[in-house]
Image (tube, rainbow over all chains, first blue to last red; front, side, top):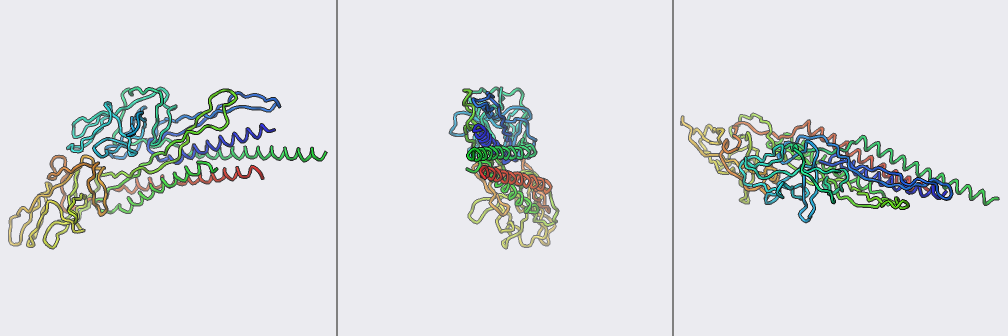
Length: 241
Length: 262
């Protein structure tokens, strides 16, 4: 009987976490380069306890849905999208480890450093990319990631891939941290200038997830309440005897 | 404790509100001469590591760490300096730039500002000025007895004086370009000023070294694409709605939790 309380309470906590995840996906339905956050639950060690009640442990796993988002034309020369798989490499000013992102919305900061709007430097093959602010001519980014200003090369965007990119940790700015995983240079990346990759969140999927989570939550609550009522009935009836 | 999803959804709504505000500004300026549209860029907020509750203990499996996101926020607005269409006005002092570059004007404090709005007029001294009276640089002075003013593609301003048959040259318009135009700061009144990010301007005659050409008698319309703004507006509104549904769902969950004990 008490196991039912525990099971329902644990499930309600897990469902609340799940709803928080769905909320974050929905909030980022319009965030450039955002990748849908996914949970899945594994049941471990299903068994009957000493009273014969079914018990199990659950473990929630988190992955990123890395399916590509739709490409949007922006016409901005510093917007780039990746046609195939891979990530751009960025680094925060005070950080040692780089971050990896598909949000190719870049700006030229003071002193001409190519950076993200969040202030991370965009890394090229040889470190941060300096865009000459006195270049006479347009800034062009070729399909292989080579940046030229007025025809003169200024650097090449680094594009990397990972063995298990969906396992990477999330950091703000639609980016990921690799942890111990080593990046490999992407094989023939396709860098598209003037485009951005939109969020790959599908509102319908998230809405159904939201409804499902709410209903499961209610069902668990009902289960708690029913258990409570059965117990109270039992104590009342037993007390009368 | 209210679920984080309530706050996350509220932030999602705020972010979409910012987007709607920006679209409203673009649409309001759809007919503003030389206006350049902007867009809002969003980012997701920091992720917090939390321990998944009470799981994985009995089996010796390590408890799962979940990364919980906190929603989205607007991080920047970016202006798109693409070419706008032209309207013919027939006014000799209206000019549009076809291609890259800005007219330079001197502000009252002596600093320079840059504009694509070529709705010029003459000051009482005969100087070429904007509608708000800022002098175009380099200064072009038109004598009071000029009966015809001509500006060619390369920005050479000439005039025919009363009683004369020949045109005389009055001056040369100069345009300014920036290697990072997106780094310019809008200061209102259709004016932009240089920032550290935009770099120093390059000056030059129209039609040379990548500068656009000048079209007399035309004005550049705003580059707002109304249909595109409308679809963005619908998108922003729907996302706002989605997030408001999440607020409701989170509220219902709290209610459900409160009703565990009747």
